Length: 207
Length: 207
DNA sequence: CCTACCGATCGGTAGG
DNA sequence: CCTACCGATCGGTAGG
Image (cartoon, rainbow over all chains, first blue to last red; front, side, top):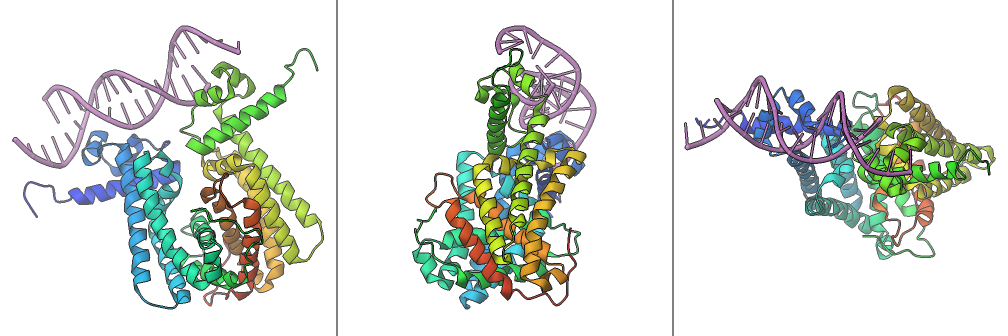
């Protein structure tokens, strides 16, 4: 514990980020005010600005921290050699778990990226694309013909739809928990994948 | 063409609503300003306020119009007697088509309902629940045991996740069009549904 | 000279 | 249908 620096500087930053994520998730980035953030943190606004340069820095940190964690999780799962099916189940389970632990950040990431500047947004979206790429790789192993038809990415996005949407209709205090939904999502996706027909007028992949 | 009233009063209102939906979808309800709406409409702000009482009235109209159309579409499909599988395919196809035609309104409905007052929000969400109920009814016919396990609604929400999320990653000008995605979504959902295992620690339905 | 923090208020812009 | 504004509040910063 060094002398010159407050014991909890990083703790304070973390606490502020969590409070901001909660308010941004609830009211949206624009509608949430720095006054609200300061109040939720039990700090004056001037003190809040001591820890973060401006409102935008909060948004960027929330988005980047979250997407970086997602990236790391996907990389960790893919590093373990397993059958594609087991790998897909592991991917779904670990991503759902991470989302459950970071619901505020997740909502901010999905709804407020539009408020990032072009460069920051591209960097965040680039990391998001890495996450999608990891999933799509496994989808391509499960259905190589889909990969050829340039459909692994679209199919992966349907999977992400199921997962991302979960956090809009499931209540944290609800009777149905995220962990029990993960295997259902996996069953549905893995069970449905083999039966998909490649469209006759074959479309080209969006990226 | 009556004298006292402008020839295109309702046309103007419709045009304004479309412009507002576009801006709300792009920037979010809070970040989009009435000045922007007025400019996009080629009207002064005062004239804009002649057609709509306030910003909130625009939000409410956009949300209600859209959700009412969805309600009507689901009711129309369910009225036609068919096998559950054909009915589910028809539901997916017609909802995707409607979403494709009303992407701005759809985004506003999914991201900006939180800005509605409690009563208005409840009314809109109530209509949304009717739409879900229609889908869930067919899911229950396809897997009666899921209905007993109170899982038809959650499974329906996974399906809505795939569909709703489509409009975040598909670009209107993209090479992959909505009509060709609808049968893929249907294949995935209908193909995956039979293979889902009812969780052992049976959860109770949200709703 | 540093950090952590306060009460008060800045210039600019929102919805109306 | 417009210009000219309002009360309120925004994000951000001053001195101490």
